[in-house]
Length: 473
Image 1: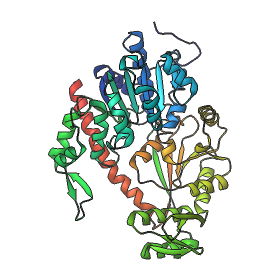
Image 2: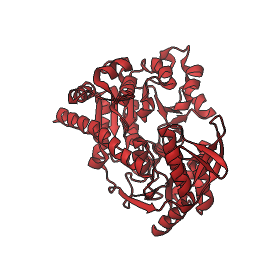
Image 3: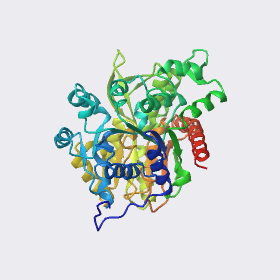
Image 4: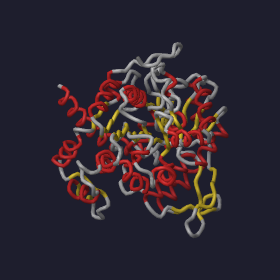
């Protein structure tokens, strides 16, 4: 019998977690494309516990975003009495490395930025039989969507030697089906989609547009072929089909473009140059222009030196802070999560929104864990972050049900994952997502882009869901 600890809640697997666990039992190489908030970490703990009791594993290595490394994997086993006995070593700490050398933990978790250190100080020159783990979990598999990234190329050689390789994500192709290649490669070593990204791309995609910078599928046959090749190791479980939390309610809070910036905004939009507060602001490309205009609607902009390097932050207005305070008041003054895109934007929010704190200001694992406890206790009224820093793995549903996007994002992954920080299992209220948007401005462009990207992502998830249903029927 598994050790139990009275006083803690019992782990009761949801239907989605039961299906996910069976997939990990059936497949040593497993892609679990499981919607946000469905409990991927807990079902993995359940499977890891079984492997240990059956003496089938000597340890599990987990790669995860830094805050998931600090605030999710070390904490979650202690939330369920069935898993409290599992020892988790955080390799961002001295104690974690000592446990790794001794092989004394069940789970070793490290952030993706720690890959070079892990290779140099542990994997390189050491026989596989001496490693403290034989299973790897890529928590947020999309970290490897670029197969040519340094982290992917560096770690693949070592991870291919492990018996079990599991990849977890809720957004496998947030921007394009091209991004699936690198993720599947980390699981199967190229058995299904090949080892060459260029060959995969040229086989199933073709260039679009006269400059040929974008690639699109050659046809429905190409899409079906990709799904068919990975269906045996990848399954999809959509949040909308299994979630026990209410559906997300999205609200657009529209404000006029502040008069103080309107002239400069229009000049930059038309001329790709404007002199603002006596400083030059340049936008030599369409991407740069979109970024500069988003900065301006957000309340500030970076100026440039003659060589194009950013010189200083120009504060333009605080209208979005006023909108944040109005939204907070309409929500009863309770805690809210605020996502922003730029450093100067975050600084203005911290200054202009009472009680606001930035996730990025908490550097150590201990301080981040205390932050989470304070948040859950209602001691923090506004938690501010760039979506990249908080969009994966954090359980914020016990402290609030409200998300505010001060400035919208183009990233479908960040948007979906960010919203699911409060729309998770255990949420007692309807999750509400507020998007502050300047009327007739660049702010609406990311909203349109998100809708287009979501269609591409949902097509993959629906196809894999259908394959999984057919296999189990």
